[in-house]
Length: 385
Image 1 (cartoon, rainbow, N blue to C red):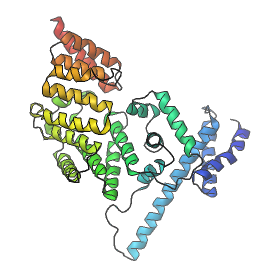
Image 2 (cartoon, helix red, strand yellow):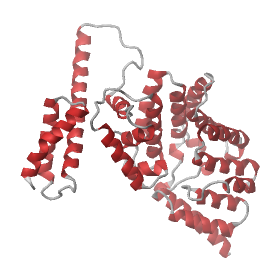
Image 3 (spheres, one colour):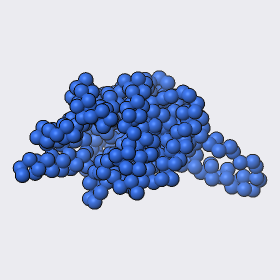
Image 4 (tube, rainbow, N blue to C red):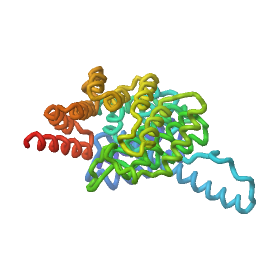
């Protein structure tokens, strides 16, 4: 380990932390803690970018120390309040440190897309690959975006929190990764979204909370033995959490009554229609298509268009769904899986089997790879009879 290099880096790293908002003493302590970690780890596993490593670890140490100090102060304040009682704060008046960090990372000097990417990486704990998949961009593109965001905020103080819409976008992506990805973050995303909804009374915060609750209600039914993925139509609806469904519908109805429709409310309305059906056959696909039309109008999101094609296939027949799919980019994630499903519904099992196998090769995770491989094998076995 090059100790002289470490000594040379210390003043610069302390300066960077101070420019980010740390006071000098706290920055110095954080860098010292990072140096201890460097001494332990660099001998066997030296970083490729020593300065970047030291900045990142020192900033994390500073945030950890700040959160610990905040928690200590809160405990002391609670003791003081017990000794001299005072009226309790209004519900939702205070948010915890995690939510505060979400707002700080959504800094006004960043574009919304960059703020979301940076927050997901720095606070949400997602990898660059996971964020890139959520944004439908290559991993290298997302890595460059995050690096630019870091450079943008390197010389500004984190004293102007970002807007609610950007924070909601981050929480939405964190929930999606926790719901369908490798890291279980969905419960934490729900907890923080509840706080935003209470603090802001924002109709889209309520819409996002409803959407999360309605999706989370189906979680137990989404996987079978060995983690096997169970499609919505095949799920045991007796495993759905009716308490969460009722809460989600109630939150959604309150938000829709404000007559300021947003994309999260539209998505929640679609989820509510699925939850309302006692069986898959009873699903009101016509209404679902209408809500997807609203969602596409609000967002122009290609994934919303892809899901709409599935809904059209259910409402108006698979050929209508394939016609809607033909207007989309085949490079979209899960495009080939949707195409396979619609061809199977249309009776073309040979084409469907080939497309399921192709979709499996492009699957973003092990669960989908297994599911699509099983679908291809099932049809191929039928074709060989």
